[in-house]
Length: 335
Image 1 (tube, rainbow, N blue to C red):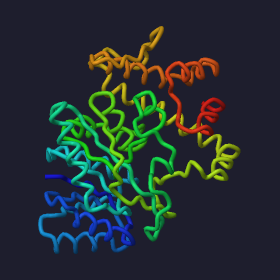
Image 2 (cartoon, rainbow, N blue to C red; image 1 turned 135 degrees about the horizontal axis):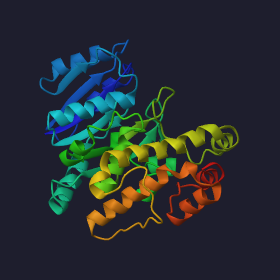
Image 3 (spheres, rainbow, N blue to C red; image 1 turned 60 degrees about the vertical axis):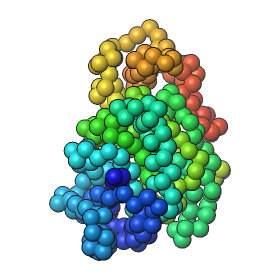
Image 4 (cartoon, helix red, strand yellow; image 1 turned 90 degrees about the vertical axis):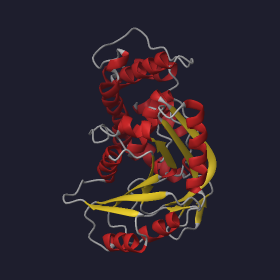
């Protein structure tokens, strides 16, 4: 059984299309767990009607108190999914549309990965998407090309720039259990970034070029795709959004601090301790790799107390660059 985690809030305009696209999947062994965050429109009515028309396919929880954000609503969904011991989980955004073979393609890759690495290894599989407008008209055939993101980011790249979009991924039970108790931490930027970090450090992240969903862009997106070729937007941010960019970088450092606090102790890595050097070890010795990754995250989380020269030096030495010329320039200037 594949469980789809759907966080909704005032999504009546689009959520019906999402539900129809899930119902149209070629794989039928799925169930939706939906948490509505106090919608004031017809979202709940649409969910209830779908549940009535498709018995056993949708379980709805209406939050008595608003969680306050999509991030928190998803965190609660992951906690519930872990408590129910779901085997495979796919997050879903209320405004996207799944292609009919999405679940089939992602689940096949997951099956192969678990046969190779074992079910006890945290595994995340994610895919490309087509970026579309409000009316589902194509903006770009590739989310990664449009956003200028690295499809196969390593841990030192994931730390500063997430490349995993939650609505285009599937995770296994080992990954679900590993993250579910930490996602409500204030320093978690978004559930998908934390999932990517955890799977990269403690398990495996796999990517497929297959387009599995239509990623809708509209004025009410909680998180959306940013066109890397949109020169006016890049110039505007370069000249007018220094404080916002610095805040985004600080958020990645705070997230690393919480990550190390949550998972570092078994590997002898604790916040507050320092070392003369950090060596990234990509060998097959998973313990060494995890320890080196956690030490890298610890050192990165404390960069703000270092001099400008040492911050840039650290970035260069450990190849912790965001993808894209303007992003790298902003890292150097404001990092």
